[in-house]
Length: 352
Image (cartoon, rainbow, N blue to C red; front, side):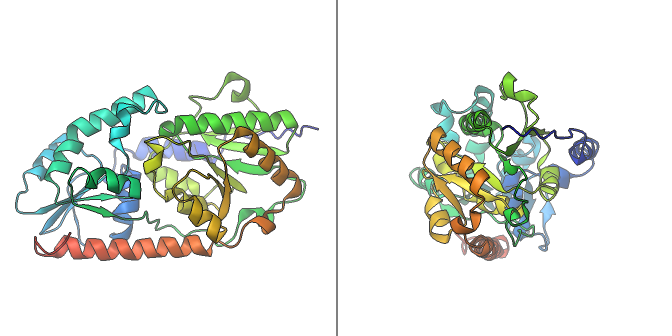
């Protein structure tokens, strides 16, 4: 029997969207990107920093640029010859040459970044900061000085799983937070969801953006589509949502292979049990610490397992506590703070 649940599309999501549009041009803090916050600013908010641009900062001895900034800002900072330059980049831009899983528009944006600001900043940088072993290897093989840092979320992570409050007859609340760069993974999720619906499973799915949703799903009462928001407001909205399960398929590709551990903490913010591909670089951490579920990249496997979860509700048998994710995030924060403290104020030749 199919149980339909009608979502209200007029909700707090409209508030966050309207607020983001109004506030976008008021302050640089509204415009930061994930790279800036989770690899630099979250661990340095108490530090005395000169804000040079949306994603660029300086001290007396050092300059930090995170991914990209206004062309005039980047050119000015490249001329700061007396200061050390640290460049933070969190994607494999070389994958854009041949990774067919990337949407064409996004692929072209990556190429434009790589061939423009990235190449100038990487060449000038004393150290390039990256978030994953695969990306570390990409830059190290090209002869760059590289430092790897785990992502750090300054938000309070949930201490309990949301499924603990799920009524026995309520729909299983499934979420997927990936957007444009996750095209192949989103396609996988939507295929899983459509197959779940065909079984009559008591589930709901929430995703961000509707650009690739097939017509037969676009108005389905069990699919909730959130608006795209600027990163600042996305983080604010994330606290308002609670999911029992958060999907993160990582279909193998040169781009996906360089992804970070970011989704561990992001999922913990809203208390969802993450479901991850066994091909993801951090699958072993999830499996060993029982902080999520790890499945092979098969639509049939995900459909069968999610259907079973929606019926059995046996999460307690499958996962432990969120403590290892909290500990990993806290360690990341300490390591970031120590690294940036040493680099931002130290004499030019004392930090690498």
